[in-house]
Amino acid sequence: MTTVEGIPNVTPYVTYGLSKDSLRWTAKATTTSWKDQGSHGYIRYTHRATMTKMVAGDVYYYKVGSSQDMSDVYHFKQPDPSKELRAAIFGDLSVYKGMPTINQLIDATHNDHFDVIIHIGDIAYDLHDDEGDRGDAYMKAIQPFAAYVPYMVFAGNHESDTHFNQIVNRFTMPKNGVYDNNLFWSFDYGFVHFVGLNSEYYAGKMTKEANAQYKWLQEDLSKNKLKWTIVMFHRPWYCSTRSSGGCDDPTDMLSRKGTNDLPGLEKLLKDYKVDMVFYGHKHTYERMWPIYDKVGYKSGDAGHIKNAKAPVYILTGSAGCHTHEGPSDTTPQSFSASRLGQYGYTRLKVYNSTHISTYFVDTDDKVGNFLDRFYLEKD
Image (cartoon, rainbow, N blue to C red):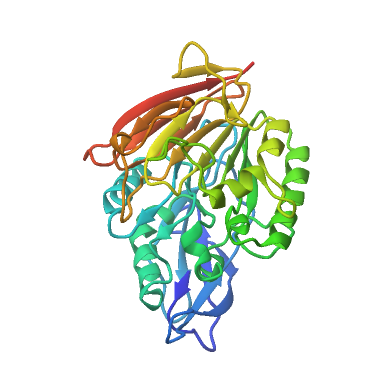
């Protein structure tokens, strides 16, 4: 919970329970004050509380506030790793151009279609704009889905504009044990190990942080025993662009190739058999064949790949922002399996230890037409 005014002399808290009429348990919150980096330097207050002893599969009702005022009652289902995982994944979502996507995410959430929603950078456009009022408007817009399912975020280039101030203070992600911030993390869910990384460390030539993240990632992947591994970051490594060479922005390539001072990530992902990579930054949708070091591994069916020899890359940056690109704006690359020009987001479904699927939801269409159905299978 974030407020624009402090709550002096009272303790904020969350009260929760298994029925909206019986909120039996209470968890006290801690408050962090932080200054917006606009010209006025407005102060905001983020209040964080941790609910404990949750039982997988149970629905919990909750409200937040203090003795001065309380929110409405919301609810969420505690994730059940024994069930199929259903996720929405996207990047580059504006509070203005992205409202069709936001509205469809709200509808799908209330129809129980998601277990988690993951935003892979470039949030609100921008969280810090208008002295932070843009961020407040965005948080209000997404509340009808973010209050009901976990909403996971990490930084894109638009979050680095304020030295990550807004994303660090507005959100709470899993701790990485290296830095006390939201900038890279991992979590397990059923058969899947998810990893969110900060590609802006590379774009900003933040050598110390990039090396610390690399060391953490190497250790994290070495401990992972789950069947599927999905890695996400903001800047794309492979895609079709106006250039005949595809994704070739030197800044974007830093996290893939590395330099003498910055460790490249691509070999690490290949060595630890990462199955799928999601990114954004380019405002379009494209799915690649399995690829490593610019070599695409094609097989008989682009819509159903078994025992991929390298990670499958999906560019999903078309949720809705100030610019947009479609297939007619780009030169297709040899490793490109599918390109779409609609606004929308990607759905991921993990069935079991051998099958996962993705498809693109066209939010230009009022009912959310499903496109580019894709299945990934392994023994």
